[in-house]
Image (spheres, rainbow, N blue to C red):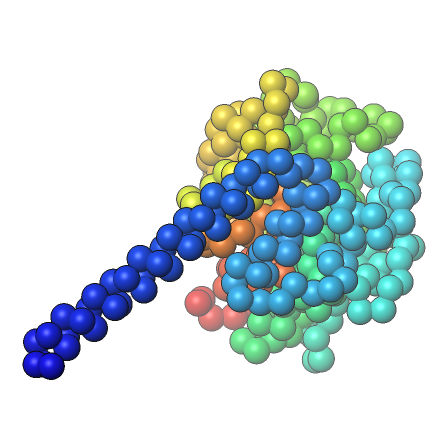
Length: 336
């Protein structure tokens, strides 16, 4: 056989192989698509969490999220006369360590600065498989390698909105003496996640007619409280599935089920734009810093979100790296 014929035969074999591979992938996709379209509730949540690992060639931890799917592993929220509610005390080795006030802590050896994080369940670190795979633990370890070892306190609760968080900040500034405050939030205000849960009168901290204005007013209040004590504040808009440029089939299913006539995708998307604009104005003030995380998963093609808010370990890793880079100059380190 001549060299030309051998090369032609080889090219044909390669083309046929790729064709068979593409055909197999197509049929697998066709079989998977109807199954995805039937998923909802916890089944969708669980499938997406596992897919977030499997689609990246990783094994999904057998125990699932540290807080359980839909928080089933956690104690019920505790009613609080000031905050509305807070997370209960929990001690599960390697998974959750929260004190009687519902606060989590994580410190690296030689920690010299104290970072206080406030927000809802995303800020709490939901859907990481372990405590040491949460975004805040990974960010602290990253910053330690950059010469900024931290002690982190996370004061957050499922469905908290900015009104709850500002009240939590008031006490935390007195009792916990942070060097830097980070708000990782935004989406709960736009989806009104906590309004059905609270029996505490948080007015005029929010206005149901304009959640964006309420959020920005609360963040202005937070900045004023922290500035009075000389503490810088970082405002980080949390990751948003609507900002992901190429959602996976599972994420598209999540989007199909996440909105209704009360809270639409268009309203949330437009609301994030208004939040960015408002925070940009706020961050012109001394001691205020903006760190937009809403599009941090934009380059990902694999499933990352398990629902509209949460993400598994791969998402925590991406968010941690983004936060560490953004926090470094605020903490006094060299700009990345």
